[in-house]
Length: 434
Image (cartoon, rainbow, N blue to C red; front, side, top):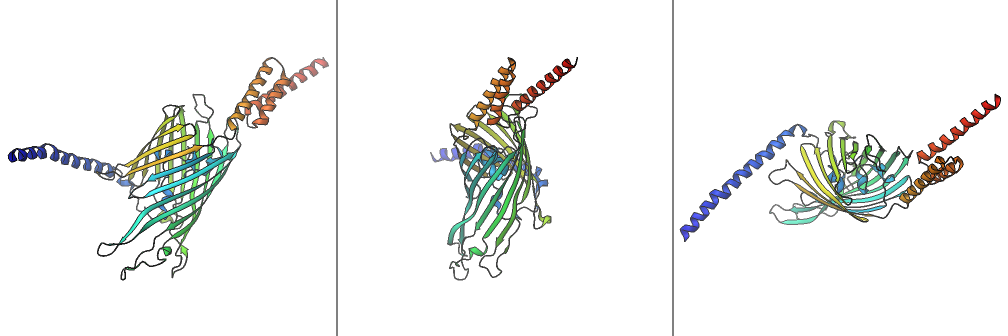
């Protein structure tokens, strides 16, 4: 019996374990070759800025699109991508985000936004945290706490020149304050925790974001109320970080914040599908020689049904390409987002990022109903116009404009009637001279 088991184990090792090991080696070589193909994108200035959490997505839909969201910016995720978007969102919203990042780190975010006609505003709090454990020379744990970065954001935006065909020029900004919390550490000689030792390495940052968003129709071959082409441009994290609190050196400037210029475009080529592209150029405002390399992302969004969307994205920053997959499910006023992102060049065990988001919509404050009412007045005016009742037609179109001043077809129709009357009066005058 013992010989039988020895023979079985030998067969198992030769037929299963060894091939798996060979396959693993091939797997490593495959990933290594992929990593080598991006070696030209290695950034020597990576890690030269502070508050890295400002560059980490909160998670959800925008991460599923490869963070190509500067021009998309169509839900409460807009804060980190384009502050001009709050004035063009359809719904008053509240969002909760959780992102399980690398090395046991996590990001928790809560955000809210509201819109009144062409003005929008909102607020957000985002917290990045990771366990901070200190060990002595003997490997014993002597201190345990959390390193964290917390950012609070207040947003305001306005949509100028909003009309029927051209949807306006949205301009907005974020005012942000961030706190980096370093836990206290121990004295290596005594092993005692040094009170307030972490505060000297903690930091307080003040910054702002500025953004613009253009929305219009171009090469549109389907019927839909929303514009199919969007262009966005933003300046992110313009400000300073202060550190050295309660230290002998005193309060002084920290390293540069992750300031960047972002440009994006999104295009809905058919009603169920949209593609987006983003380009990001970091700028080190304290030392231009340490400016990091550009990065870019591309995303695809497909509406499978009225309540299910699937998304895919690719992001390249440095030599670390990331591929993202996600889905969004809409259940009445509740919207759920699930995202999975993996890094192809990590190793046999890719770095996996998971994020979820819950968004609650509280309605559009009657804007859609007003649009329908304005359209009904416009259509009623067309009926009067077809019957030659010009005065009644103009009356209906004026009611339309009173509800929606940007309803261009009604304004053009009134001008047409006015010009027709002037032309008719001129013909009458000419005939009277004869």
